[in-house]
Image 1 (cartoon, rainbow, N blue to C red):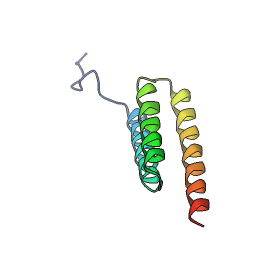
Image 2: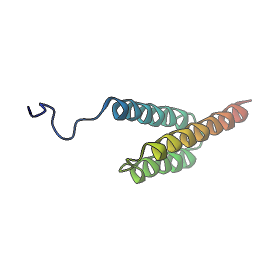
Image 3: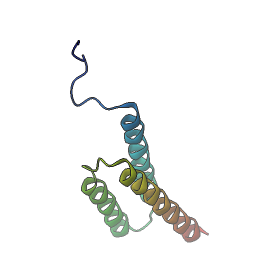
Length: 88
């Protein structure tokens, strides 16, 4: 049996797609946070987002990752709604 040419840390297609979803969510959250008018609130939210993503960095269970992505998207929508209300 021939050995695989891929390094042991190579992601599967499913893992690669999940990683892209997480990175997109992180970028979208940071973009939304940039719209927060108050400097201290913006800094707090940015630190919060960074810590949440760091804390869950080592998660490997597919269902848990999917749930965290869903929760992150819901929190992003709430932030966007709050920003929209603040502007109007």
